[in-house]
Amino acid sequence: MKKFRLFLSMNKEEEWINFVQEEGYKLVSINSLAPIYTFKKLKNKETFTPYVRLDFREKSMSKTNYEEYKTLFSDSGWKLIKGSRYGGTQYFQQEHPDVTRGIFSDKDSQENVKKRYVKFGYSYGFLFLLYFYIFYKAQSGGLSNILNFKSWYLTPNLWEMKGEWFWKAFLFETPFALLRVVPLFLFLFLGIYYLLRSIINDEYMFRIK
Image (tube, rainbow, N blue to C red):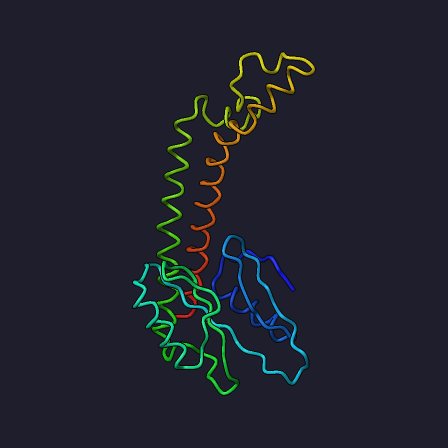
């Protein structure tokens, strides 16, 4: 079973994964390019339903340090099912039913995960908004020009053309038009997304203090 979900809260993501697993499924993979979660249905209700816990690393680690990092959790009964030594969310799953359901032994460690998550979000949020601003300033005509679909095309007299000539010119330039505007909207979306993530998780940390 595959499910698409986009989360702004790390805590909500973890809760949702475990909720699905409690319905008789086991998380087996997460797509690297899109937030698509793959679950495998357990054979019966008596089958061990593992918990999933999330860690977050905002910085990359050397290959050796990352192996030591995974081993540390593995020795405590947690298997890494998705993660990268280059940073980001690390997904750990219980290997045995007698393993404690928490991967951190104290509240400070839990809050440090959220702090890393928030710091990462603010950094990339402002970076993507900076890229958006640079692309925006490079566009002539300002916001009204960007929102005007016809302005994306630079072929002279394109919109006065008729019939076959119009479609040939339109289809030829469309890929170039998209290359001019898609990065602009992508950077805006990513900037807002990462900032919202940080703001929401910042509020969550404030409530648990």
